[in-house]
Image (cartoon, rainbow, N blue to C red; front, side):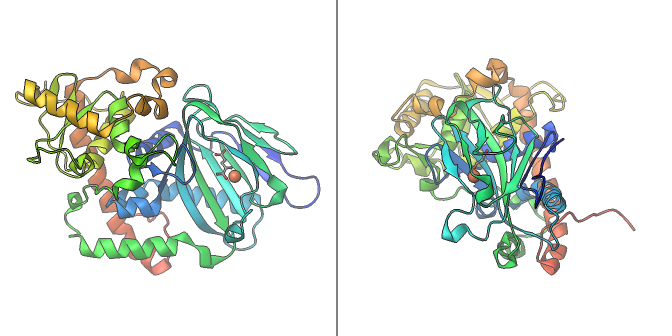
Length: 400
Ligand SMILES: O=C(O)CCC(=O)C(=O)O
Ligand SMILES: [Fe+2]
C-alpha cells in the first residue's frame, strides 16, 4: 500500500494494490463486454447501471453492489469524510486503440462541479490486455500509474489532481470508474431505484427468466471509425464482439431482403462457428452475446459437461444457410477489418482464448441461465430494503 498524502493539509490521492480480486475483475469484464454501448468520446465504450436496467438486465447490477459499497467506504475513510458521500456515477468503461484523454481535473465543467472524489479500479493489466493507456498526474507522486488488474486509484476530483491518460495503442483497457459527491441531490441510487421499482413491479416476481436481455436502440451500439464518417460504415458493437470471438450469426427470419439487417439482430437468431450451426435459438443479439461472453469469462472454470453433446445440437450449415450467414455479415460489416481493429485482443490475451468446445459452450448456456436467475432473485429480495433506504447496499439474506 502506498499513501500519497500531502505532508500538511488534506490527503489528495491514494493508489491501493489488489483492492479487487481477479475473479471480481473477470466478472465485471463479463458484464461490460456483454452490455457496453458506444461512449461519448472516440473509441470509448461504456456500461452504466441505468443502461443495464434499460436493457432488461437489472440483475447485472447485483455483482456491482458490494464493490461500490466497499469503494465508498474506502474513499470516505481515506479522505476522512465527516459525512456520508453519495455515489454520483458508476460506470464500466473500456478504451480501444486510439482512445486517450489530455490534462484535466474531473470536475472541470460547470455541470461536473458536484464531483468531489474519483475512484478508478483497473480491471485488466497493461502489457497483457492492452498497450499504451498509462495514467499520469501532472505533479506529485505517484507520477505515473501503470494499470494492473485489481488496483484502485482514488483522488480528489479538483484541480489538485490534474491528470491525463496516454493513447491506447492496442487491446482494450478496462476500468470501473466511480464519482462521489457530498451533495446528496446527485445520488445516482435514488434515480436507479426508481427505475428498478418500475421494472420489478411489472415483471412477474416468480419468473426470473422473464429477464432476457433486450437491446437498446441500434444507434447506441453503432461504432464508426470516425464519428463524422458515413453511418453506413459503422458496425454494431455486439455483432463485432461476437465476430472477433470466432462466431457468426444465422437468422432464419422470413425477411428475405436485408434492407434493415440491424433489425434482424433484435429477433431470434442462432450462432455459427466455421461451418457449424448451434441449434439453440437466442432471443436476440444481446442474449447471444451475454452467453458468448459468459463462456469465455469462465473458459477454464465451467463445470465439465455432464455428457457428450447430445445429437442434433450442432448441424452442418447447408449451402443456402451459409450464404445467409455470409450475406448478413456482409451487410452488417461493410468495413471488414474494423471489428478486429477495435476489439483486437488476440495480440494481447493470446490465441488460447479461442480454444473452443461446443459441449462446454452448451453447458455455458445453462450455467448462464442459472447465474442470471440467481442474481435476479437476489435483486428481488434486496429491492424492498433498497426502496426504503433509497440506497443500494448488500442485504444479507442469512437466517435469523
Ligand atoms: O481511466 C483512467 O485511468 C482515468 C480516466 C479519466 O481520467 C477520466 O475518465 O476522467
Ligand atoms: Fe479524469
